[in-house]
Length: 209
Picture 1 (tube, rainbow, N blue to C red):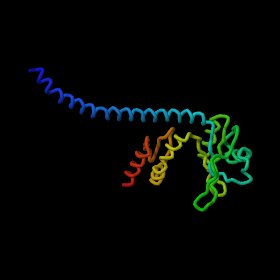
Picture 2: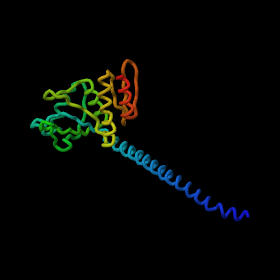
Picture 3: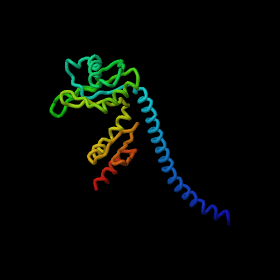
Picture 4: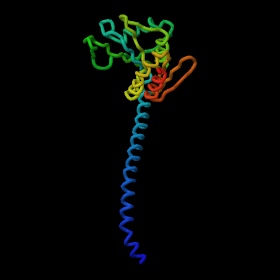
């Protein structure tokens, strides 16, 4: 009798087991996909960090007009940088060149391509960045910007904070991007640090209410 009951109930157990397997298999696949995505993200972050380290002697300068005077960026900057930042001290530039394709704005006016500087030491890069924070440089009435040369991945992560930065600056916050991609904001002696653009934007919206 016991054998018959066992035989009788075995199909139910088989069906029950199949249902369990159907439920577990998608969960396992989902876990594998999440693990793979997480691994790819961590791997991508490591590659970006290595690339960023290899570029830490580099500096991008945005807003230098393209004309006969600046046709040779290296010669131009060797003369211009000491004039822009006379108190900075000596630096050594290895090479300088324009990067990227030619572009135009909405009025079909050419947009100057960035100039990429290769400096002998990353401390020279930091000297220029520090001096540029203290002294604004303008050419033809437009500001010249000095930014570190990051990998595409890091650049995009930092760029994603643009909307939040604009909103928070309008609210009177001082904003600072921390490496690789975190936003630090300060106002009235209070400091906040945001790991994602979404967190920063949510905070900005809450401050408007």
